[in-house]
Length: 260
Ligand SMILES: O=C(O)CCC(=O)C(=O)O
Ligand SMILES: [Fe+2]
Image 1 (spheres, rainbow, N blue to C red):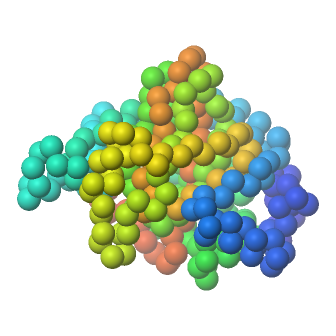
Image 2 (cartoon, rainbow, N blue to C red):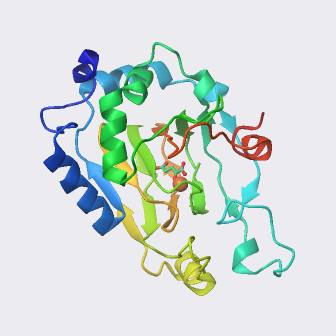
């Protein structure tokens, strides 16, 4: 284990290398589709990331476009008002990986072998790898007053996030567990529509600064409600692949980061 990780992760409570602990975390993630590990990160980590990130909103990329829930271009085979083509609004901004300092605590955590092995075992894969592009691996998200992330399914099978600064109000993570089956191409349009229009089976996930969130977002539709108040919501996303050498396509980079 890298000696420095103790500074940033509470490894006495969250025993990264303990097979029993890994197993219990994996079972909870499987049962609930989401796992929140309370106070995974130390105050030193949270304070340091907050300090380096706060106020950097002007450098962030704020996509001005809308998107469908599948994060794909519209499909002309469906009507414009079909659930597949409905447009959601996302106004949050982000710093890409190449905007995160090489000396950031975020890098120390992202690169740490014991953290990677822990995540791999909890999500049930042999190994996790960084993205093979300059933008995707570590991102810092900003939601200013009124900004939100619209309903969507993730492209990746799992996501790792940690909240750095909560907004004063709003900014709630909402999700609908196991709404579709991507592997079987069962998109459940009726269920998706019902969740968006009538809030059917919408759950809320509560997490606080320093908690580690592992979330299976490929089949569980989710969103973040608009932030309210004059404190920007800051959240870190640690993105991994389950195979080496994979990067985003040029068009995906353009969509998510506004550049290639
Ligand atoms: O901001 C969050 O809590 C979730 C972010 C998310 O769902 C995403 O980046 O795909
Ligand atoms: Fe997501």
